[in-house]
Image (cartoon, rainbow, N blue to C red; front, side, top):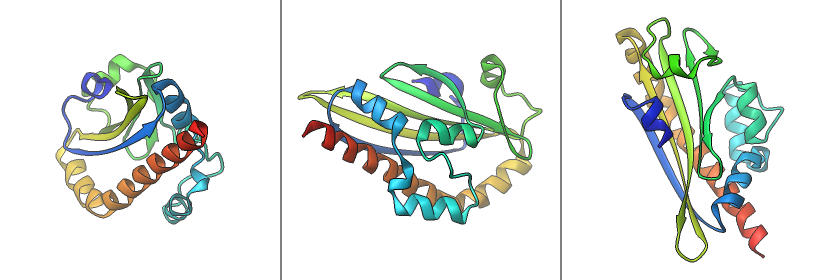
Length: 172
């Protein structure tokens, strides 16, 4: 798992799963190209948090939010990540991200894995991990996470629902 490589230690995490009809290749492509504006829930939650939401495909939205596509194993897993001091910052050096570089306050990784199951079924697992690199950030983030985690989870569940819907339409 790419998250185990880049964020083996973390204080906060969240995992969501979905089973879809279809192979990992199609599931992977559907995830990268899912249009999040097809969900009213996601649209409302992004607008409430003042998050950028003009490019609504996952592959484009992550660029707007300064998430770096840190690594991918084509058709089986991809990992977006960022770190921050006071705002989200691009990752220029994967090796630096693997280390706990103390010039940053926290590191965040968000992965999608596509697991082959019998009978042309794919299990999609999305996981988010956060490692706070100092006590002040950990305390602040724990309060933030308490309030944001349910909505973050709802966004992930909605993403998986949209991917599943797309995969079902492809299967027909």
